[in-house]
Amino acid sequence: VNSCVVDKVPDEVAIQIFSYLNPQDLGRCAQVSHRWNRLALDTSLWRNFLPIQWSKGVWSFTPMVDIEVEEQSLLENKDECVAIYYDEDADIDESEEDDDTKRIKKPMLQFKIKMETSMLMSMMKYLLPKVGYGVKTINLAFSQGLVNGLLYKMLSLCPLVENLDLTHTRVSDLGFKSLGRNGCGGNLKRVDLAGCKNITDVTLERLSQALRSKPEIRQEDCDDNNHEEKNEIELNEKGDKSSKDSDCHVTCRQNIKEQTVHEDCKISFTNDIEDHSPRMSESLANQKGRSVDLTLTTTPTLKVGYITEESPRLTLNTGNISSFGQRTSLCCPKNCCFDTASVKHFDQHSKNMNFKCLTDINEWTKICAVKHGHESEIICDNLECGLEYLSLSGCSHITDKGIRALVIDQQTFPSLQFLDLSGCDKVTSLALTDLVSVCTSLDHQFLYYCDNVTADPYSDSASGCQNLECPTRACCRTGC
Ligand code: FES
Image 1 (cartoon, rainbow, N blue to C red):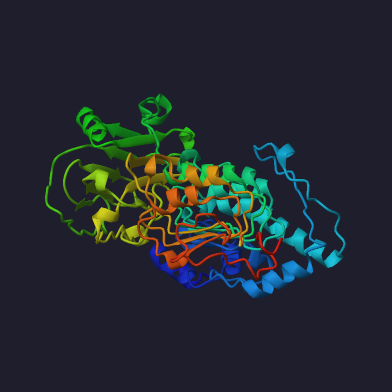
Image 2 (spheres, rainbow, N blue to C red):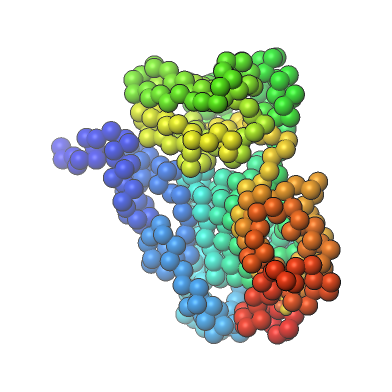
């Protein structure tokens, strides 16, 4: 029997080999065997989801959209640009869809849009359900085939997405309906909605809800009999009390089916006082049954334990939950227990469970254990959102209401470094001030808004409207 080198190496090595492949090749590998399918669809290989360039034959995980070319194409096809709506049985009311659907005039354009939409639908059906939790970047810029139903499903399947680029798409508020649900969108750092002229304040309200995702304790879910036997979430009394004291919540999302849970999966939350020192020990565990103890810092302590027959036991002790800064989760090599949400400070190497130190626990906010739709999260009440980039350029329907929805309860945006409200000519200086005042890191040279704002609060420091010479995005001076 012929066998290739991949069949003889451990999973982590095989995945490393697969990491050199492009998405098309990975798709082909996934059809070879069950093992290859599992390896090729490892979530660590699918960080970037770029279906628009893939539909053009650019099979790369590196974004290669040429904005100038795409904008020129957008201009040329402005009159012929059409909308093709597919009924995807998304749980949304499509009766509210905008009625800009027009008849296709150019067969080539029609073919292109169909190809794009077809690929999006196929990936939605076959790919994202398997790799969605690993996706960090979704780039759908200049997509002409994207419709609200597709976006809705995409966001639902990729709840840990950090970078969302929907530049010049015709999505509207309905497409963002999944934001904020089950923590979807809570990790967003970069949101580019430039040229999305159909969105309104409702989208910003949903975005705001997503950024402050705050799961509630649902202990009844954890006590579910169907869940107890195979997936155990333990929250001892002491831990529960202390968690409340520190304004932290533990959520066990119990939308899973019993059979989807790994039979040996075990997650436990405790609140033991074990270590007050700001340190963490680095441990490796390469042997079956061996424990890994990562002690981070002060109380309350969180333990996440994971046991399978084939992988070692992992116990993670963390502390000072209220000071956590970013969402993080753990990853099982076979995608059967945990999924990695952030590798910035937390690295792992597949089967050996080779966990490395977190270098800055203060940036660690959340531990999220994900398994086939099951999540267990810890999140703080005073969570500050990690949004770094927000572009609403050309979103002319945005008003003060939407802007203020972002700053409910004076939630700060300590990481926001870019804010583009060019073309949002309905936003007044009052709402603008409310938002900018909570963006503590925002350098005003990266702040853009309408030049015609009355009582302009940042006239000396901000950069003004960027759409004055842009033919594709709204601006009150050009009438575009
Ligand atoms: Fe007012 Fe551009 S939107 S100057």
